[in-house]
Image (cartoon, rainbow over all chains, first blue to last red; front, side, top):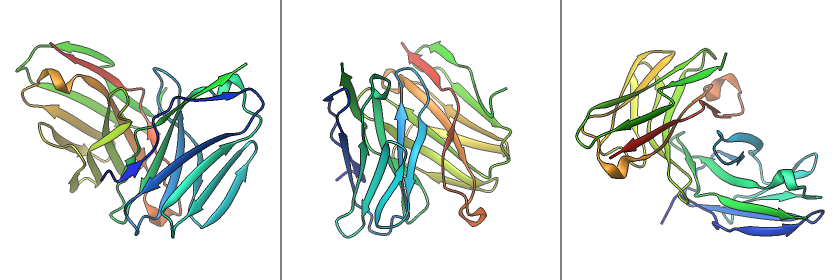
Length: 110
Length: 116
C-alpha cells in the first residue's frame, strides 16, 4: 500500500464549477497535510496546508481533513482555466519525512 | 536569485557514468530533501537530511547516495547511472518543526537527467 494515494485523473471540470480532489494516507501518526499545485515543467508550489480536523478556507480553496478516516481533500470553488494543473497531496509522517501522492491532473474546460 | 539552486538544470549522460546533482540554498533551512519525479508517479523521496550529521533514506534510495557538505549544500550522486534513472529531480528545503513553521517545502527549479 502506498503511503499517500490520489486518483491520477484527469479530472475535467467546467469553468465556474467546484473541483474536488481527494487523498488518503496510511500513517495514522501523520502530523501535517499539504496541497501543492504544479504546472507542467515547473516546480510544485504550496497552496494549502492543514493540521487539524475540519475545514480550512483560503480564498477559493478549502482543505478538509478527517484524521479518523485518514482522508484529506481540496475543494476549488469557481474553477478558472488557470487552475488547470497537477495537484499533489503531501503528508508529513510521524517520522517527519514528507511523502507525496502521485498527483491528480485537473483540467478546467471553458 | 533563487533561494534554492540546483545544478545542472539539464544533463544527458550514458549508462555507467557517475553523476552528481548539486543543491544549494540561501534560506537558512536545516532540512533538505531530494525527490525524483516521473510522469504519473508524483514526487518520490530519495533521501532527506535534517542537519549536517543526519542523513535518512527515503522511499527509493537504491542506486543513489547523498552528501550534506554544509547546512546550505546537499548533493545527490548516481554512482553508475542507468536508463531507468532518467527523471526530473527536485531538491527542496524546509524549516524544522520547532520554529513553528508550516513545514512548507521550498523547491529548486529541478534538474532533468537523461541516461542513455
